[in-house]
Length: 256
Length: 196
Image (tube, chains in turn yellow, blue):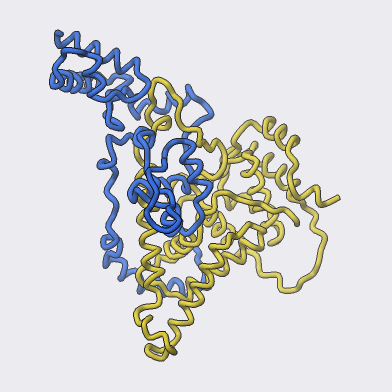
């Protein structure tokens, strides 16, 4: 698969860490570094496996985590020459996480206000153009990735690297999903994968879903925090098919 | 000018204006009318629209007054502008929040908080005039300092910056209630998977 999906909704390493902390119901001020590092790296690996563009900042954070983890393993006072770094090695990271979370919450507060052209209107509408008629409604990539991780847990890791010709292309899966969505209306993320027979098929389905978001054919939403992820068509199917016919969508060009 | 008449004229001004009208501007237009008279007429107008459940209300926003539809009617007004629900991405909202609370602030400072590059988001915000360059910081390289605009206040229905929701203090966020969680949490993480 050479499909390279690039997403603009990347929120960054701090966001991923907060996500993992929240997911495991941990305390920011007392992060179990080993657990978090492991999960952080697993998520990066999954993102890379999906050919998602993992920005450099994520790798820098990975290095930071590993560094902190190694320092936590050293008994206090046995560090060579680095005496000035006396305190908790996690301190700086915790400070950054708290600071970031503060503004993440502030952003949430702003979003709850009576927003012009969403909740309240004035007589001459000339404001927001930053509209997202389709796309990820308030949902981060990490929410999707961790949902995907759960789906993949159903399938055992395929230990033998047998090369089989995959029968389903991303393009085919896209059409399948569109048809499915037209029939069923709103569907829950997990149910997209019900018919999947292998890990590969789950991944292909996931990529197809991302492609559909990218061409703004579907909307992926979460109506409440931690609630189910819901997917629906963003326009009548005919319009979407028109659009797809016009756009060159990856996956097939490389197949010929 | 009679009070009823004044209210009516003010209503016309507010209806005709496409930007929030400041008290100053209204008193310039209404030559000879006392400022405090205008202020109390505005207040009356505000209550009148409110209590009659009218389809537009008088709101104080971005340092002025503006007629806005009430939130409970949003569902239908939105249909009038079908296809353009104003939904901002989280990147946009977070960046705006940082600028709003920390202004004046440099791009590098915003990036340090968010942990990612904000180049694209920042230029969108500048384009949409929700943020602006306010000065240059007096440090090597003299980077730009950014701040919010009155369009920002209008977008979020804010009278002024002092009316921003209060930012939680760091101390508040490290509440001791978290510490009882960490005991359980270790058990959860010990099991390895994050099943719900």
